[in-house]
Amino acid sequence: MSSEIFYDKAFIRVDDRYIPVVNHGSSNCFDFDSRGREIPEKHWSVLNYTRRDSQIFTAEEMQHIAEVYEAASMSNRGGTRKSRNRSFEEGEFGRWILAGMKSAHTVEGYKEYGNTVVVIDYSDSYWQKHSVYTTDELMEKLKELEGRSISVSFWDDRHVTHPPMRSKGQPTDFSLLPEFYVLSAVQGYFVKRSSRHIWFARNQKPTNPGVRKFKTEKAAQKYLDDNQAFFSKYAFQIECVQNGGVPA
Image (tube, rainbow, N blue to C red; front, side, top):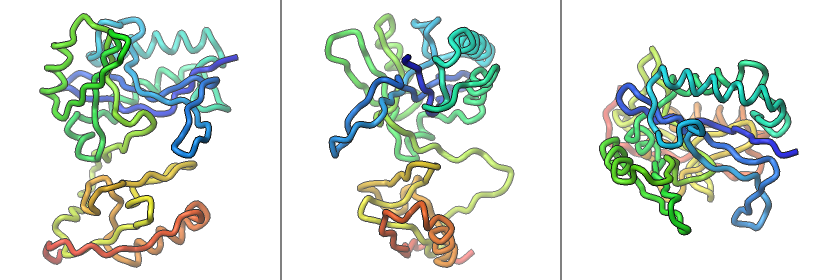
């Protein structure tokens, strides 16, 4: 039996409205990576199967969308999953959708962390990806393609580097430090890790906002030591970046 697996969400904020973009794929469909290995299908699209003519929704409309998807999930138990081995429990899928509004970012916010938002036009046999880099460009492209079969997505079908959530504490502004430290490998600069994957910034400078930075060499080494088992397949080096800032 085929199931739809929802791997991630990356909602886009447009003023006080939201584009509910999610990463998902069929449990029975696979792609091939650069080495020819089978990997699970993943792609980004908007949660709008009851509103195909719309991409952007108010908070109230998002509540309705969450209810519709939650009801569909419960009527097809096992058909909607949060991983290959786990289904959404009752009420969980709806809450997962609504939580996307709290972690939503603007087009500019996603771009700052190395992502590219695209509007995909499915109307013709040859699908067209239109990259947008600002909220204004996104709105202009949606207006231009109004009435066509479209969806908002990301250039990378498999993952997004999420901008950090707003926190009460004051985050470190590494641009003000005279130097900082990053982890480098042949795959690129270390960005983040999950329980199964590691992401790298390829062909990027270490000052790129998505690259994980450390105030001290000791902090970088501690992070490597704490993740030694997970990082065993990668030859990381601690690299000092002379930043030109001033001492804190």
